[in-house]
Amino acid sequence: MNWIQCLSKAIDYIENHLTDDINIDEISSQSYTSSSHFQLIFHLVVGMTVGEYVRNRRLSSAAQELLQPNSRIIDVAMRYQYDTQESFSKAFIRFHGVPPSKVQRGQVKLFHPLSININIQGGFDMSSKFINEILFVDWSEIDGQKGEKLTDGEKYNKLVNWAGQARGRNPSVFDALTEWVLDDSEWSGDKLAENEQILMQGVFARFKEQNARLREYLKELEPSGVVNPAVFKALNGFDDALSGVPNEGPEWFRDTVAKVFVDFSAMRERRVREKIAGNKTGPAGTDTVDLYGYINYLKDCDAQVQWALFMPDMVEQQQKGFKVDSFEYKKMSAMRFIGREGDDLDNMEIRRELFRTLDAMNDYKSDFDYDVLFMHHYGLGVDVGQWHGVWGRFMKADAPVPEGFIYCDFVPHREGKAGPPYISQFAFATFSGDNDAIHRHEGYDSDAMYDVTRNIMLGQGVSIPYPDKYWTAEVFPDGCDKPSAAYMFSAEL
Image (tube, rainbow, N blue to C red; front, side, top):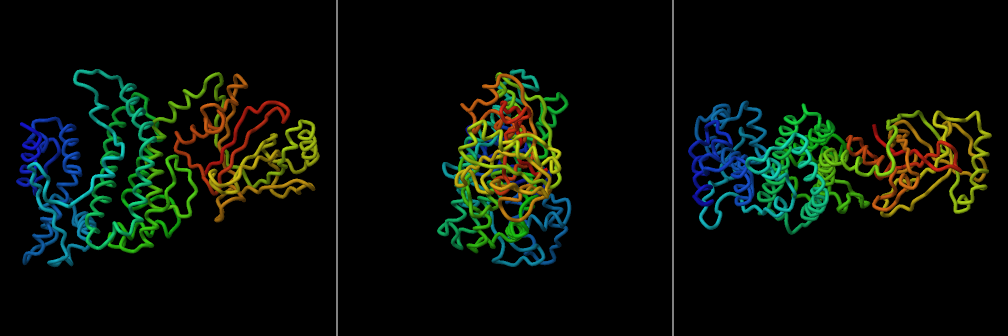
């Protein structure tokens, strides 16, 4: 049986059992292929998942029944396999744009059964551009070849490899999504339904499907101890965002997302689409933007899932010639960093004189009394904000500032504006081993201490307040004239 016959037979089965409680195994059995292979072929050919297709057909048919005299919403909901009238109503509104109680002829969205010959006809004229470009998990690869016996560790490592590859590809796809949402020519009135299909029943639904399968697969591996627990938190946050309820962001951001999920026609407004799209943040996700939107947030959620999978392994690989002795998070009270910046501080005697001045301020010592090279960008992204390296110490919040010195205040919680005062919450890592290896720059974004500290945080799902409250510091436990062997990295705990 060729693939056209397989898919046609499966679609016929769906149509004949639209009101029955059917599952993917029953549907794929009609094509005499494995469930995973059938789902892959269906998605590649049709441009949507099997679940999306069944849902679209049920909601389209349900609307037709509700137009009939004496039809009751609860009866139609149960008939089309919804557990409650409330869940049916929410799905109906997302699909048709109106609640079931107000459905009228001319307001319903018709999704016709697919007919597969050489071309695919029926349904929406949906572009599969974004779906095809996103690197989703290839479950046929993860499950392995027939007869291949894999340990839980080997299975998990396949997911780790996927995560690393996805980080190299997916950010650019999210930037393309942002560009598409901002393109006015793509959002004329007659394209709204198709665009809703692309986003809601296409990209977002596909990510939710992947997240559900990832969670289930990881739960099976969890007893063996190979799974980083932070990945479950990342998956939960991503699912919340994909359902229209992001856990972070200002009120206007969350309100705009909720508005679009209730009524997708809000996307006709240019200003709404600007808030949904945000600005492109580049393949590394660090480009400075004027507006951080919903697509940017989803991009970060996708990254957090992948970081939780591959960062612990990367941290282990990066420790060549040195090791992390300790790692902890600190929440400090208000502090004031006092110091100086300038090329003259390369002179060791001038640097020592700086710290002798701070030594004399004994009454203002803080609970973090180390010589430090504090680094920041005044709340700007690293692509536009000049780097500032300031030699000094963290002192008490009310410490006076000596003449010729500068200061930067730290407070326990975030304040509204970008830049100082910064948040007095951070990761603190100490290192030991070969000094050159600890300070190696080759192959790192900054140096080994910076990368390893940051990557441990990313692997644990801890938020880095980049760029508005971002700062780091190189710590010299034995004094400024000895090599540094510890690192501070701004966090939001």
